Image 1 (tube, rainbow, N blue to C red):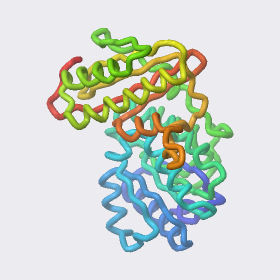
Image 2 (cartoon, rainbow, N blue to C red; image 1 turned 180 degrees about the vertical axis):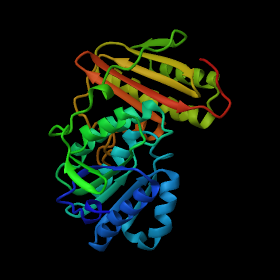
Image 3 (cartoon, helix red, strand yellow; image 1 turned 30 degrees about the vertical axis):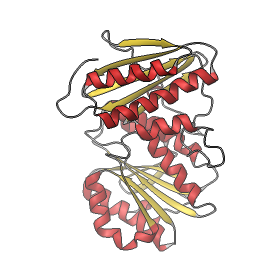
Image 4 (spheres, rainbow, N blue to C red; image 1 turned 90 degrees about the vertical axis):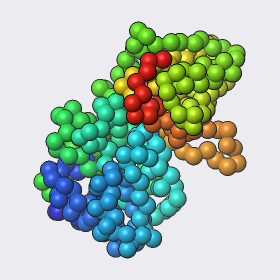
Length: 319
């Protein structure tokens, strides 16, 4: 598979691998992983179920060097993948490591793909100072916007077995504009609550909306915790009110929290809270672990965080 097989940590720091067939994907990724393991490098493999099954069938005998993650479940929230990659690097300080990601696939919802590209830009920051080689696989059958986003967020592109510098990549990996636009307005039927002092009212509101939408009790509890963490940030870090808006559509319940604060760290929430100070950075990290998708936009005008939770099959209620 050409340059993919021969890639070293030094020559391939963060590459978009554009493949045409599953056979090409499997062969190239296997070569990339095997080359790393043969060199004593630990490898994180985050792929969708079918791809993961094919790779594990060939590589499980190298288990001590490999960590597996299913992108279609644990990786449904792309922010959680950035956290996992960052944590993996921190678990192997001073060591050469490799990561394989499958950020987008043909059936992945557009909002998830957009957030995945957003997070791809942040991988360059998350791995700054580490000795990591990251291979991100994209099916060339994906829409042109996704492929263009992949090329803009990776310094190296591999296509047809050839590795080359990306002509559209900017140093530091800036987030593509289409993945950083303001989120769409809530639909007309959405219900909103403004809060300033009473966090209990926020939690009760979220729980009521979740139950009306048909979310399971367990997942309702997760959503209430996540909303409570964001409301707590409003009360702690801003001097003004926050707004919680909720609605259900397309098999999801969505809760959106807005306030006047600005999050200046682009990697906020991607590092597990330190045991010595669990409160620092805890809120966003917890939110990312609990929700199926988290979209965040922040700037001088304030911060909007949109939480998605999938409803059980057949639930299509509006809140």
